[in-house]
Length: 389
Image 1 (cartoon, rainbow, N blue to C red):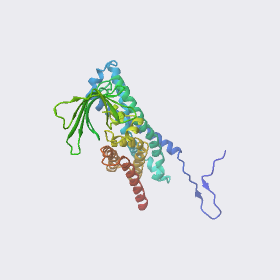
Image 2 (cartoon, one colour):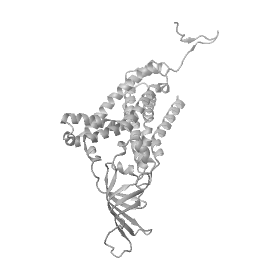
Image 3 (cartoon, helix red, strand yellow):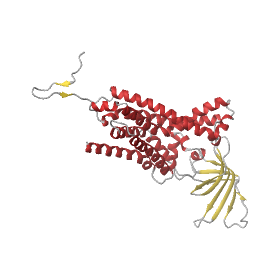
Image 4 (cartoon, rainbow, N blue to C red):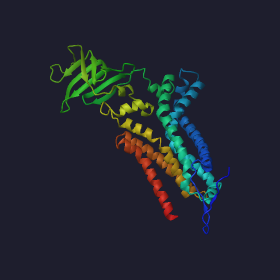
């Protein structure tokens, strides 16, 4: 079959015109995407090795001494189970590093100059970087939102590491204090189904914030589908009774009280948000005021969804900066400046995450600040480049 001619043949008396079409999956895209993927795998391996070493070293004795298997088996399983949690936050920055490293290598080898001589602009070279980000985004979401909680459940089951021992739900918690609209509550949490509160004490105050009532009971059980709790064998003290230093038994031997404490939140009390499943995060994000602040969970949920696009933005940023600032020859200072852009974006993402979790800014704003800022910065850089061309 005959191929289409390279030159369009116009009418007589006019110059020939070069035919050009965008090929998002052409030879250049496939070549660069393969190079990016190789660079990403290499960088991920290095970062994961460093992160595992830092994570394992302080608790290596605990891991080796676990009763789930021999020392070598425990070390291997621990590293495998910790990898999703350690790798997921680093993937967007690793994507930036992969594009940055490959672009500098191609500039030093003269391949970028060869591509530029064909008339291909840096903006048209974005396709491989965007494809890399579109591949890395779902991988980051899967590692962080799905595999990290699952691996922590298995780690707890195996009893490997300090987090596994700390988050073991088979033991009663230490004394916790919970601030509710009905008063201040102190209790120990028994996590095993059904979840209960042990040695509970409820301190109620009048509008002047003076002690009005104290209720103490050995066990408190939540009544399903309500904010009521059943107290077994409670002792009650009310302001104004003669024996102010005594807790008197409740006449009926059992009572129910209203406590705005979400049982699901109690069941995961003390569990880091990165170890919670998506379903649990969604439920906790919509029950603000029931004994806890939901900002932590809303920000975590929003950040999970942002990881679907953040690697794409980071990869495009590296490609644009390298294509404009390092067009034909490598420069150490410029390369370091571009690297500083990526690291600053990574640090800013962590800072915004902290701002959202502490309720300084709304979750959606904290999560969108860095991606939107980077998109605006890329548009400004490209427009300035076109203006000076």
